[in-house]
Length: 605
Image 1 (spheres, rainbow, N blue to C red):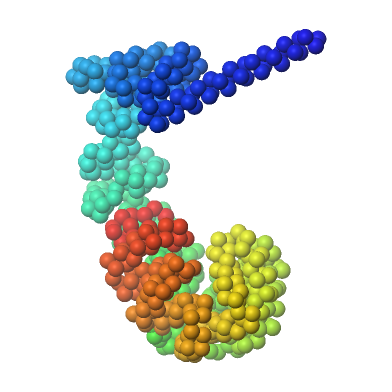
Image 2: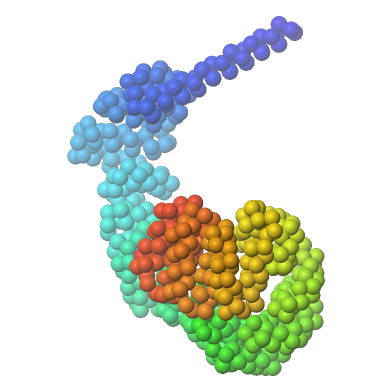
């Protein structure tokens, strides 16, 4: 028994040693190949190729080694051997054909290509894989011929449309590519996402997107019942943020699918997210006008007021007459539809207008308490209203009431995003009061929050506190800065700006200097003085580019040029500058996306 076990153990070790030795030889051969030592690589690969189990592991590098050494005949023999060993894999006959193109020339190798195409034309999986391999090897003529032959054999004029579209894209035949994809989409409407992705990958120039748009309009006019073309055109307009054109398609799709304004509201919300409040209002107004008895009427009416509100809040100086008009709109909505789940959100919005714009905090408190009482079956809404109420008590300089409300939401929404939001409010409250140790305790927990936005806000505030009290044991400057931050929250813009200037004089060269310029930039942006905001950001760029706010300042400056000053070329240059100077910035992805949009590309969301 002992001898038997010993023999088995010995055999296992021997075979393992062989396997290790084999693997080691492959690694050495690949190292020779990667280092360009092809003669040495060839010797090792030849030895390994004697065993069939090694063929798949060494194929690509061994074949390329032979081609690098100009040994085309040996390469042809090796690929032929692989064809016999693995007859079901299309890779090897394709490589064999391409090697023979080198040896025999295009014309003489054509017979082999035709034979290969005829052998696979009735097998879609093989056709698709072969087409991809030809495209990868930049043999577009062969890929095109293969797809067209297989299409003819199948008898379906839309077969292999995606593959052919990719070929036409690479050969610069944009019109043919578009026709292929639209023909395929017409036959297979369910493939719209695949078609969108292909257009997204293949179209890069504005002229190409213009051609797609023109072709889609022609298709819609010719085939008005093919709603799939409206859907694709809607997608295209959304990518270009052309919400005025998108409305036409949204209406058509909504009407065709009998959605009672649902589709129009969906796209209107996207316009809102993209800060196109003017066009968003048109979407919601359409639903309000056309579906007065529909299921989406109350939602559309509330969103209509919301979109108008965003226009007012983002126009400087804020027009108080328009604020009063918004409040009256909200009141009418509640009076007409009653206090219910569809109007409580409107009451929240109305309360915040009273608090932050009319300085009528008492009225705001009454409204929010009513919302809290009415939302007993919607606990999320109740807790949102409690956070709002906490904010208003902070405006009234009653922080104890604020922290009580925030803490209630923390407890009720534990481990939920809303609970994290309440905890962040408590952290900021401690920060405003100069209680930095308490603030850090909250922030350390929030750094691990599931919401990236909350985690980032917590990290930013934590770093701000840590960086600016480490060398200042009294933390006096940090306390003054936090007090200014509170003024900003309380909408006391003029006083906040004055205190910023006082701090710059009182603490020259302090580590908070770049933060003060950052705060001033946000304040000037808030009041619509964009040129001065840019000057503040430029100071950060000139003196503190290597500090933590360097990329923040450059990104905000680009945003101001894009959205407020409407200087597209300057914005593009700044986004490019950000990508070069701060390759690891969290703003990198968005900067790249915005740059491409300004250049005329379309971006899939």
